[in-house]
Length: 275
Ligand SMILES: NC(=O)CCC(=O)C(=O)O
Image 1: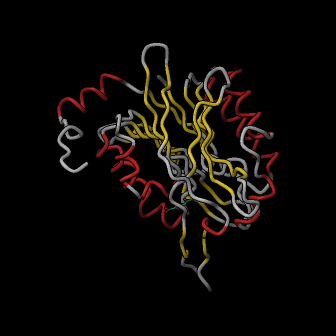
Image 2: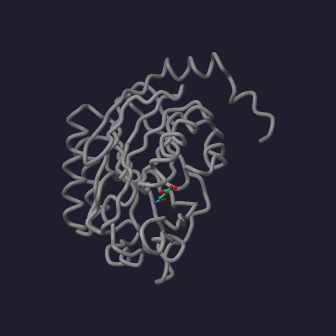
């Protein structure tokens, strides 16, 4: 199955971001992808965390969710809609949610980001604080779904950005083992430069699975800079495709023989002693 990871430089304009997401998903499908993944916060990168309330949608309703469901159905793709802020029962709290649509446009999975990012970014003057916990409520359950490519099913595990730093989440996604892990992201420039590729390849190697990591990458109109380097990694830790900066689509093919070979030759998932 060909898969595609979309890189964006989302802005403070919700409408513009939806237009760009649509164009890039269409480009991915035209390149033959049967599974397409968008980055974290694809629909909006605000100036402050509280800006997310302006565009947050109720679960199952709203223009971003309608667009995603419609595109999945029209293009007949599995669509991992990076992440969107969703409303909760508490008007002061949102979730950062990854929604997945099947090729018929039906919703097939929802994952709420479990680990909420907090970071004091160094720079000139006072550190710039990222603090998702100020407006978000954390999810508490790992989620996966089965994507059928017509020949076989792929179990796809979901995670979002900062989750990448918590290997126990990915271990939880190995019961039963996922074959592909999605990490829609918006890593900061400074943390991404230091850790992004290292962490993605480590998660691929330790779990012997493909990793698809669509990212935000560039200078945003909120003056933040993200690292980008959208990547697809294979179960041996090899980088199959990457987009360093700016918008774009990268693709790679999931090869069942490659996955089976890596797991058969070095059966370390079966050698786990601590569960
Ligand atoms: N949006 C995020 O979760 C950012 C995570 C990040 O940059 C990191 O270094 O971790």
